[in-house]
Image (cartoon, rainbow, N blue to C red; front, top):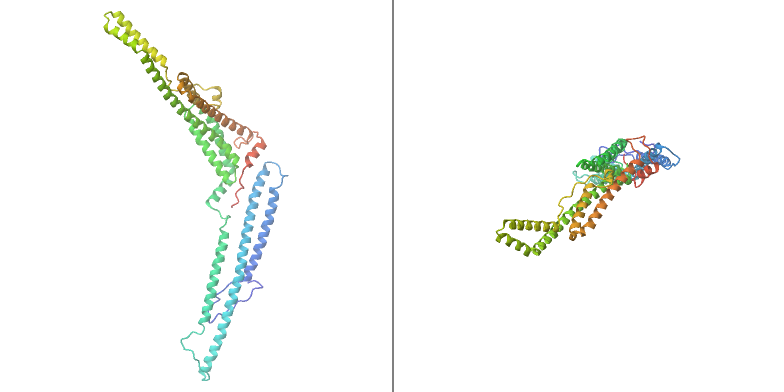
Length: 435
């Protein structure tokens, strides 16, 4: 009990066996004062940590890590201080109301005791024959005081539940860990290992990307690794352990690969459309040639049928065959399949796509023979340039990032500090502020 606490009545007869409104408001207020002091100390420590975070004199690799950790701890301390301050207000209000409930209960007890004394005095007079009570023996003269006390304790219980709920809400605030907080904490605790693994996978994807130029199907593994790296980096970004710039750098390869695949698909569609148009134009040429040579062929066929000279008939048949070949040759040939093409020097460096180049060459070949399909040539060449540009951009971006960036896998590799700092800090969320 606090030194300034008001003593509580010990004897609650005849209304109750014990104090129906227990508690010490002064002890609660003393605890509030202590919590206020704790909150002030926490904010003072947070201010010191903010000074470390804002100190531009710190240099070296440790400086960035120290600033990051001090920023996280500073926010933790400010959040805890805020929790203390919010709880303090609820406890102070509860102490005041508890004191009022106790004061009201004490008044009811005093009134009940006074009436009890009067009743006992009346009873004594009655037993001595000096008095007469008009109350029935079964009446409870103290029931109204019990009702008043029940109302007070009921109101006390309602207000106690209210403040318990308010304080519980504060205790279940953002400081409490959720599964996501635990996951972010795991990322924070294992960030060095995670960065090493992702960097190793990045180097593996780059190497396998060049090997995939010679081994069909290996590019699917490269795409899978790239998706895993980008997704992992995005989770790190959401946890405040990576910047959006780092996520975008990881996505460059995926975007350029997707763009290249999209352009290749468009080239295949264009190639099929050109082949269809070319076959239609060739059929028209064949029909026109057959109509133009109809009378000549019929004359030769009559000679073959009517002549008794075997040499003349043989010559007629040879003439018909030659005419058919000339008609077919003059109508042109449709190139159905794009021929496989050896890798060019640029394609060996990842700056191009031999499949896309083969499709464009096939489209050029068909449109050169069948001009009716030439309208698709311009679009096809634009698709090819886009595919080559995407491949070149993706390769150049990957090369630049690996040349200028820091590598956990190769810690002795030189890197360009402004590039690494800019990539690591630009568009970065505040670090995790939960425990």
